[in-house]
Image (tube, rainbow, N blue to C red; front, side, top):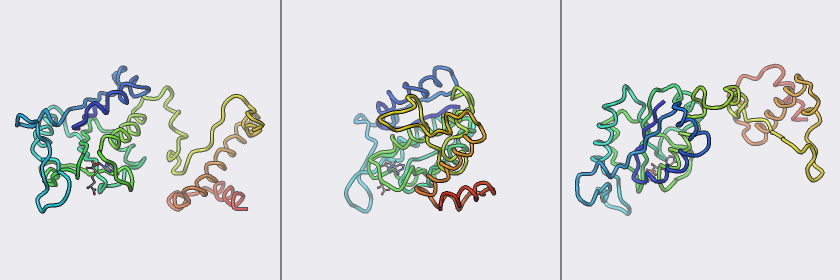
Length: 241
Ligand code: SAH
């Protein structure tokens, strides 16, 4: 998979894309991430990328021109890339979208800054606006990194064992189960007995129970959106008691 990022702060991506699994995936050739500076596509000597808003008001707006030129150039070398613009007003990014994007051959992510980008860019290119949540960031770079992290780990071969992602939160449509590691007792707190029992069916039941419990506590609305099995319903009854 190839990910192209357009930003006026390319240095923000330096460390995140070199570190950890993302860095390894790039080294292994599973993932290509290129970061381009939108300023390189401006045409004046001041490398201008923003200007005052028509209609007045505080703040600056990112000009359409440099972004358009950057997109034209990058799109030339790609077949049918998905074009995403980070925006607080976009469609909400979620695990389903991450799954979908992980199957794309190439993605271009445009990072907004200031008050956002000149709206006409959305008419010049088939761009989808994407938001990572109902809050406002100062720029789209952190949002782009969130999306890259979520999408990259779904690219086959990214994680040591592909199964490693199968029991993540949202893989089941509900939240994840709690994890424990050594020591078995820490400050008087013991790991639940069932997890050291070696009894796989019981461990599985316990994990499903804990995941459902956490979902009921923190995100009850998710339970409305998934199909609950008979066992789930039984476990939920137990939890509610
Ligand atoms: N005036 C804008 C906010 C601009 S914030 C508005 O009211 O919507 C500056 C940039 O940060 C945006 O252009 C966008 O690229 C990015 N950004 C802010 N919040 C975001 C979010 N929740 N998800 C994705 N990108 C976001």
